[in-house]
Length: 454
Image: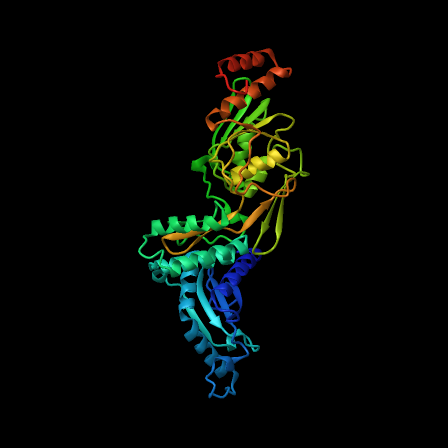
C-alpha cells in the first residue's frame, strides 16, 4: 500500500479514535505496515494507539500511591489503569477495525516512551472474526452510527444537531424493540429531518467483511463497475439521421473502464449530434465524470468541478484532461436526458455540462445528491452512508444538493428521448449533410410522435 494512501487512512482513523474516547485519553494514532515493526506480517497492518497517560502516570494512580521511580513500571501502571477505564471502547474499536479495515490484524495500545516503542508496555488486540460478527443491540447500533456521523459528515454542525436529536430519542426509548430494518428506516428518516441529505442513510446489509480496505477519499464513493455490466454503458449506437445515442446507467472509474468508454465514444465520433441518456444513472466515480466530459472539450483548459474534503480541509480540483484515447466530440450539439432517478455522479455529469454551456438537458429535475459518500459498516449486518465531501462548481460556486439539476427543457422523463431526438434531427436538417442522411433524418422525424416542443 502506498504511503500516501496509508497517510489518508491513518488520518481518518486518528480522527475517529479520538472522537470515541474522552478528550485527552488518546494522544495520537499510527498506522504501520510490514517493515515498520517485526510483528507485522506481509500484507498486514497494525494500528497503534498512544494513550494520553504517556509521561503522566500519576494521573492514573490512587492519590495515596506515590509515583513509581522506574519509568517502565510507571508506564505499565498507567496502561493498566487506562485499560480498566476504557475496556468497552477498546473492544468496540477492535470490532470496527475488523469490519472496516480487515488488513489491520493487530491493534495496540501503548504509552509513548522517549527510549523507543520497544521499551514501552503494550496491550495487543489481534483480529477476532467472531467479535466482528457478534450482533449489536439497538442502542449500540445507534451509538455507533452517531459516532461515525460526528467524525465523518461534511457538515459538522448539522451532524451535531442530528446526533443530539437522535440521542434524545434514544434516551426516551424510541428505538427499543425495533428490528434492524425498522431501525435503519427510522434513523435514516430522522437524520434527514435535520440534514436534508439524500446520501446520508442507514441500511441493512454491511459490506463484505473481508473486502480490501478502501482509503478515504472520492475513490471510495465509486462503484465496483465490472465488465459484465459493461461499465454502466447499456447501449451505444447510431440512430437514423446519423445521431449518436448512449444509454449510460453508471459512471465507472476510468482506471478500469477507460477502454470501454473510449470504444463507446469512438462508435459515435462520426455523428452530427449526440444524445446521452442519464435517466437511469445512479452515479459513480468523480474521475469517471471527468473522463466522459473530457471528450466534449478541446483540451485541458476547462475547470469542471471542485470537491472539498471535510476531513482534511483540502479541495481537489477537476479539470478536463489533456489527453483522451480516441476522438473528441467537439462543435456538435449534445443532449442529456434526465429523470428523478438521475442521481449523484449522473447529476455531476449534467450539472457540469449545463454550467459550461456544453449540453442541453431535457427531462425532469434530478434527484439532488451532490455529496461524495463513504459507506461504513456499523456491524456485520448494518452500515451507514456518510457524505464526507461536497462539490463546489467553479462557475456557479454551489452544487445541486437538495435541489437537483433543473433541465433546460422540462418534460416527463418518458418523453425526453423523443424531444431530444427531434431536436437532433432538426439540427441535422439545418446543416449541410449528404442527401442520403438528410433523407434518413426527414423520415425519422416524420415517424416521431408529436410533442409539446414541436
